[in-house]
Length: 271
Length: 267
Image: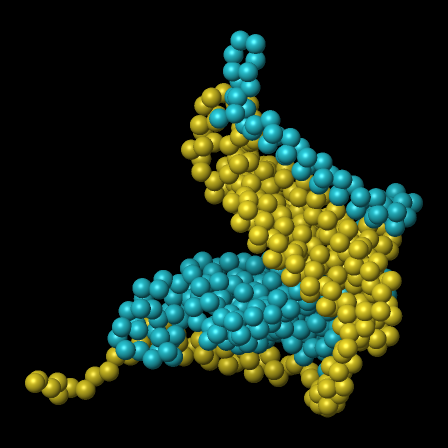
């Protein structure tokens, strides 16, 4: 226990002097990095615009109220599209993610040396490219519309679902699997009866969780032309019809809250 | 030997016990899918056209061209990294008071509800929508993107911090309180050590997310590599786009591996 010797008594210290200096040094480096980055951003910012922002914000807010409720009629179809993009995208992602996860998990992969790295590469590259960038590419390839959005969401979600799923597969209880092997089950039966029942709750939880995230993501895909309510949002912003913008934001807020509530309910029911 | 005359085989019990519910569920799924596909307006002609071109399209990405747009690529990447670092730091600093206030076992009821409301609002809108508005308010450039990512970080980090504090071991907190610690000492010596390892890991994870997001806020004018990427798509310079995507993927991979390593080291 580190103590400091004062004239007449000992005082307890949390760290030794050496360690305390190391911690301070770490903070110094961190603050230096932050300061450097901040400086560079600050150089690229026009501060007159920033100081003007409160006035702009007040102006924009005054243009946004009241929301143009009559525009709601035009929004039902985009909302339905948005939900479809999220749901169908999640379905596609799950269908592809399940085999990838089994190939990536250490205990089920056919070959740790050859197959696992490929599966991990699929997972990482799907995760590190944002759904908007996927949408950008797909709009060029298959044209603007809902389908591009569905495929973009699907491709983006494969990595997420497969990653969580293969971690769940690696954490299973091996006793049950061994018990199934002991009855003379083949490799396939072993998967179906030994592993699948154990990961089913995690699987359902992951899918619902991802669906919830996808609802949020599919609201912006329209910005690059991939369908959903984002199309109306960018159109309204471009034409400066702020009363429509505020209505769309409210609708997005409501959709996200409802989907979060639904997914929380389902996850509580499963787990 | 005794042979059983009754031939029986075991069948796995179904997940949903009642057959009526089972069929209702399948029917619901079928109805939804047919409705969803029915209302989806897909221009199959265009898709087929695209599929024919897909080979050419994919080949256009190869070989990736790092050279001809190198200056703007490196500038965009650096800008993305600065944005990711500063927004993570500022977002985490701001989210600490909000997270403390949103922990049920720490805060009074009104404070708790207020902080939860902040978290809910900052989590609802995707960073890109926030970025659109910040670009309108603060002008083009990385500052708008930085603000959008900071707000996103507050929602993410504050919520997880609050949940972690709620799940802490109250015995240690009581022990520190019983030796007469003040409120700040209590936070510093009983709560902070308990939540720190997980929070450092989550901070690095958020840095990773912020970097990935910073690659798209540029699409709406918020600075970073996204602008360069969008330009190269618009100019049909897919080989440059491929180079950018490769750089993004490799930085994310480095971050992911190092975050796993740092998390192990911290714990």
